[in-house]
Length: 488
Image 1 (cartoon, rainbow, N blue to C red):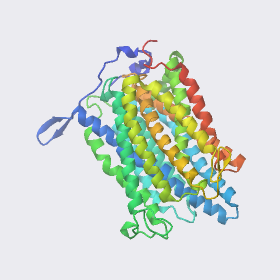
Image 2: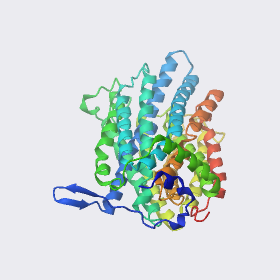
Image 3: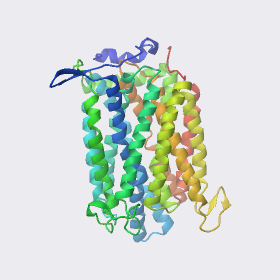
Image 4: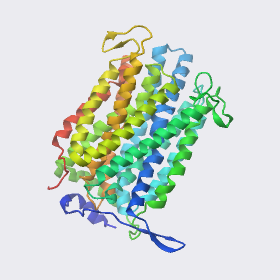
């Protein structure tokens, strides 16, 4: 393990001096003696983290629980005497406030824990602990009652699981540099995202086919929710929480079997050393213009992307008045696009490098956001539509393809570009800063959406701040070197 002093100086060491392949191959004991975990198994184990964890974002944040909660909250405020538009706006504001608080918790904790993991030399125990938070928080969502009477308690459970998911992701991302050299990590990252998106797709298809009930009490394939779940009490939809928890527990098994910390690293370090390392890391950013610019850029554009994911399903429920089945089908199309484009993005990353891939994705997403803000059931870009027109549905489905596809590319290429700015002596420290940049303003998108929704009284216009965040991210990319900090 690198000492605390070495880790604190790590950001001043030229990245061109780092080894081209940092893969370590630990051994585990079995009945036959010592068996080496191959590089291939370690990569597959790391990919299974994406497969296991993706349903929190696919099922809970975007396509099932988020829209379900928005509908429950809107109905609650409608019954409390608010008008339809005001109830929808209040529901979106409540969801935004929840994501704002969760974003603040993640922003303040991520860099400290990344530094602490560096000085302690371990990542797996942290991932295991946050996995417990993920499973407990998601399983508790079963108790989200349709009358909205306990929605604040359930938002707390959602926040617990979401914090666990995001913190675990920081530590898993930090393992990417150990899986291959600079020519490989882009494709490994893209394939991992594609694999994860397919996990999200399959989990969503299972939920729609077997659990989520339509207005007639039947699932997408026309059957009653399985296990005797009561459609009238929305138990099929509420089962998304326990289902997500069980999925995660089951598919994290390959990860914990095949991915290991270096067995020769001894645990040591303290909170004081972690704080010192964090302060040093942030201070050294003034000498690394490319890294600082990239962290600032990704801070804005990843926050905007998370805003799209967080409020996409809510927008469909409140503005376009879609039911959960239609939102789910929309989700399947979006996730398929994300998986396909993440894989393609990995290939483009390998050929052209991650920076141009990121720039194209941001421009496409800006166009998508403007389109979403400029449409509702009655008009698109100010052009009036006949009553009952299906064009808004078709346009939003197209937007879903682009959001999923460009989002998959953006996340994969971003992870790859961070590797080019990462010091091998302190990868968790570096990805802690990456986590900080991704979550430091995680509260900004939901906060701005909440404010815009309150001021305009419109769930549609409320999502407009996302455009500004993408533009800020695009502007800061001007100072980012395509190959990272090769000399400084």
